[in-house]
Amino acid sequence: MAPAPVPPPAYGRVFVDKQSPKAYHALVQTSEAVRATAADAGLDRLLVELVNLRVSQINGCAYCLDVHTRAALRAGETTRRLGTLAAWRDTELFTARERAALALAEATTAPSDITAQDSAYAAARAALTDDEISAVIWVAITINAFNRVSILSKHPVRGPGA
Image (tube, rainbow, N blue to C red; front, side, top):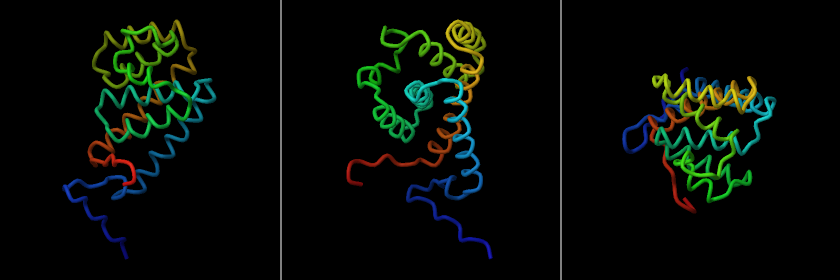
């Protein structure tokens, strides 16, 4: 007998992670592999969270912004840097390595901008190893996928005590 379908939320969206748990579990497994790849490449947790946050900002994913802001703060990120992340190019708060990773994450999120891709790769080549470049791209690809799951499911961001 097939499992009962998951009822849609009150606002009519299907939580695709709940409706198709095998597919979602495969995405979680991919995320775990990417996290290990990033660690093996030498990317620290703060840099990974900056990439997750910047991609989520571009995509407008409230759920992932909430999750990864809290994760970045737990990892030691400052509120000042988090508050200026959307305008990172206009600050002196981010290292050359972080700037290269953020540009590469943005180019991964908007791959049709070939000029941005070329510029991001040039910066990445100057600041990151091949393993780090690959890991940043995989982190960006994975958070882009999670953003789509949460945006299209309209995962709620609830207030304190909810």
